[in-house]
Amino acid sequence: MASVLVPLAQGCEELEAVTIVDLLRRAGIDVVTAGLDGQPVRASRGTVLIPDTTLDEALAREYDMVVLPGGLPGADHLDNDKRVTGLLRQMAGAGKYTAAICAAPKVLAHSGLLDGKRVTCYPGSMDPGSVPGMEYCEEPVVADGKVITSRGPGTAMDFALQLIDVLAGEQARAQVEAGLQRPTH
Image (cartoon, rainbow, N blue to C red; front, side, top):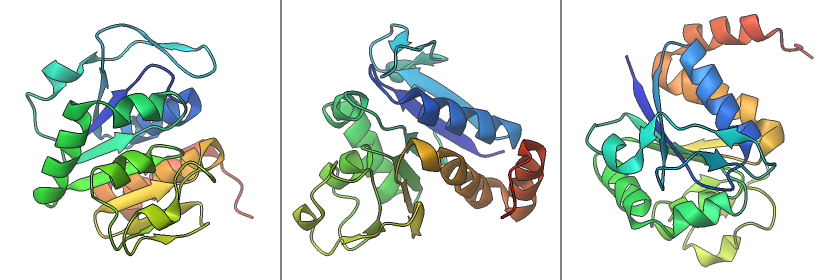
């Protein structure tokens, strides 16, 4: 079974965080949510999320993927946390997946993971010219090698389904998507 770490920072976008965790767990993926500061996380719209563990405790394990929810100031907190940026570099160096949505792709950029990659993010959250060779796209979800990015709260379900496809396969994605009763047109 694939394992995924979702770091939760104060001020994260709750729609993204909860959608990612919910859909991946529906697919039977082992998801660990980890708070940066050991406290309940007050998300950007005031929803309080209780992480499974602390980031320090979560870092004792290995993961197949790290997924960063966006939102502000959550993405800034992730970007300023050396544990998070160090983990992202370690994951990329080991050939594992990193993924980010909304404002969080800038954390991937500042960690040096977007050079020469096709990416998307929330409009205006990152200067596309700041990363050498990065190609900014306006697609809802962009996968380039082991890096997967998405635009924002409205694309969270598509993003999570893409993560399922990568980690558990097309059949698992189809099964989860069927249960969601998403429109087909």
